[in-house]
Image (cartoon, rainbow, N blue to C red):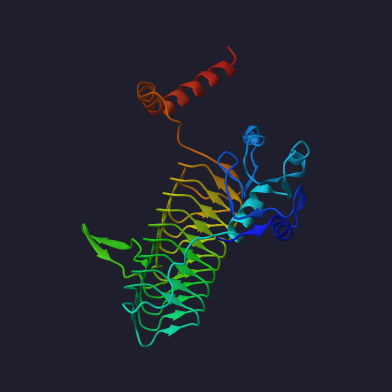
Length: 341
């Protein structure tokens, strides 16, 4: 287990220490569950009541919240960002693999960088290039011509099809599939004719893709996920999508083909995005939203309805079907009101 002094964390975060800077910190925890040796944080005022009761050795606080706190604190500009950085610094997550397991199948043409670790029963295909300190978990399959940048981690049972490139410092979680075929077919008199998906996938640096998420290869060009994108579990990214830098997509969202999502967007969970449209930089979308048209301006967008009693929902569904008729009736009434006698 890593352990540091509070002074070291203060230097790491460029923060000010209130109290004993020699305290030893070995992990992070919530205010409610923290114990001696742990550091906690207050980022949401609704948890302030827990501050005076916490058993944490120290707490990350803003200057405002530290004014009335008598305990030991590390005062920083943004306690939640500070928590994230401390959690990284004290991280004890094991490696995806250590060394190269004898059961791994590595094609003779593959280039394996210095410090690469490959787990049991992994398969490394022809002409694969693995940068320095890449970690390949147990059961991972890499198709031919895959390129993976330095320090990227693939957890157990990730599948990467041919001609997929990943940048540096990426994390791909278990069960993810990168580069499978997009849903491309032509219809001839009721029969589906498959269109070979001959493009690839290009993923930038510092991208994280959650467990059991899928990224389809391009039909002709590439599907692109740019630097800093974070994708949650069970997300579908279809062929030829382009996801801009530092965009976040939450779990169970489906993005249809040929969609361009801008930079710094936040897409909530269980959203559905129709194909062949664009989303501007800085768009935020609430969970459960259906996006069926291009969004040209940044802002917060929402759709769907909140949960309600089933009987009321059924009544409202019927009324929703009557909206068009109601609209025309109101327009007629307005017109009659405006018409002089």
